[in-house]
Image (cartoon, rainbow, N blue to C red; front, side):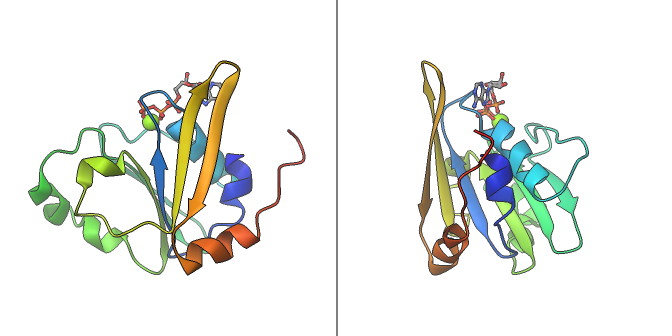
Length: 141
Ligand SMILES: Nc1ncnc2c1ncn2[C@@H]1O[C@H](COP(=O)(O)OP(=O)(O)OP(=O)(O)O)[C@@H](O)[C@H]1O
Ligand SMILES: [Mg+2]
C-alpha cells in the first residue's frame, strides 16, 4: 500500500499520518519511501523529529512529532522551511504541532483490526485530489 502511495506523490505534497501508537504509520512511511525508489534504511524519526531523504525529483521529509512539545523549536529548527513546493512532507503525530503545521493535502488514517490494519486516505486539497487520481490498487495484494 505504501509503495503504491509513494509512486504517486508529487513535490509540494503535505501528508498527515494519523493513527494510535503502533497503528503502522512508520511502516507505511517505509513503504512510501520504497515507492519513491529509496531502498536504503528508513529509521523512525522518533528522537530526531525528522529524517531527510532526497532523490532526483524531490526532497522528502519524514516527521514524527510524538515527542514535540516546544513551539519555539519549530522556528529554531527551521521546520517551517521544510514545507515548500520542492518537497514532500510526511508527518506522524501532526496533532502534537497543532497550529504550527500548514494544512495537509492528504490525510491517511490507520486503524488496528483483528487481522491487520485498516487504512483510509482523504484528499483535502486540489493537489491531494489530483494525486489520488493516479492511484492504482496494488496488484500484489
Ligand atoms: N499492516 C500491518 N499489519 C500488521 N502489522 C503491522 C502493520 N503495519 C505495522 N505493523 C506492525 O505494528 C507495529 C508498529 O508499527 P509502526 O512502528 O509502523 O507503528 P506507528 O504507528 O509508527 O507507531 P508510533 O505511534 O509508535 O510511531 C510494528 O511491529 C509493525 O511491524
Ligand atoms: Mg512511528
